[in-house]
Image (cartoon, rainbow, N blue to C red):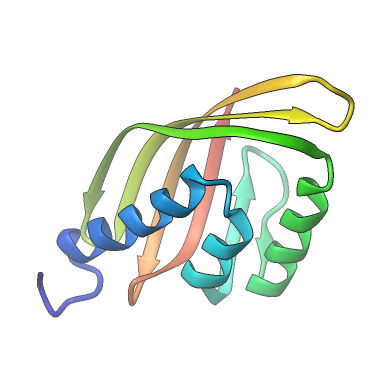
Length: 123
């Protein structure tokens, strides 16, 4: 692997770490491990969330509505210099007993092996 933490090979290694955590529903752990302190996250066209602490607090609140996690499947992905893209399906049951499958495309900009900016496009 290159010494450049933003090289496609380095991004691929970090991305595989993210995927492993997401696959087992460890969303908060993935955020704690891979987000920069000054990260910017954006869900579709919603307002951006700034900062690791706020993003993790928001995620924890969202997870309160999840009764059972069924899986996070990455369908395909690509990496480039400082950037990655992937398509995934996340499935869970809400506390209201609604089964949900969210299809999403994720665009991530990386800095020094961590996520500096991420936007989720989903249906």
